[in-house]
Amino acid sequence: MKKYLVDGEVLGQRTLSPDIRVLEIGAPEIAMAAEPGQFVTVAVNSLSVPLLRRPFGIAGVDRTRGTFLLMYRIVGEATQLLAALGAGDTVSVMGPLGHGFDLSARHPLLVGGGVGLAPLHFLAASLSVPCDVAVGGRTADELFWTDLFRDKTEHQYETTNDGSRGTKGFVTAVLPELLEKGSYDRVYVCGPSPMMHAVTDLVARAGVPCQISLEKYMGCGLGACLSCTCSGIGKRVKICKDGPVFWAGEVTEW
Image (cartoon, rainbow, N blue to C red; front, side):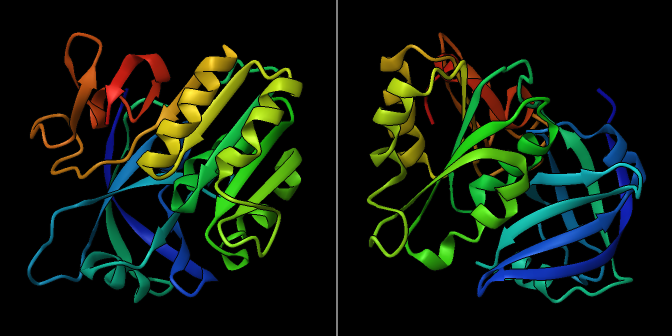
């Protein structure tokens, strides 16, 4: 699978919450090649002292315009630098990297929380059939995702830890009933590791095939540095090269 190293042009940013942004980047080569579940690594060109490239799941593409979207939470120096970028600035982008989702589902359920929902946003727009989505957040302010998914999904189920919107509890609170009544043939999961472990346990008991998108610190994003390995069946696997999307049974610890 061909990878590109290009200077992408920042076309703009928008704010989803006090600490979450959507960045639109013009890079036709990457926009045309990207598949749901793949990622890019990004470096800010204006830095005098370069930081390591940062990985971000691709949140959407517009192949006609030659652009793609990144969603990120401002948590450290690299993302603060991204937040300061404006239209016309450039970033060094490498990608698309890794392996994406299987798209053969006929009745899929997407489950996610936090910025981990970004790859699922691209997936929902790429599936040829309507999908259901279960979205979890700490408070109602974190459920802006439902607006982003509204025209891409058939049914949406919301949970909040504090009960300020939807069902009170974690996203797993609604899963047993959904899995019992939904007749899903595929579940796709992305988000914090504890949430994904809990979700995959429930999905395995229901006997539904499940794909997970993993996130881990990556030094290179190309499989050379071994910083993103996790336990697979009988071997160590590299999240950046063998994933980031795996069938739930392919990995035992992450």
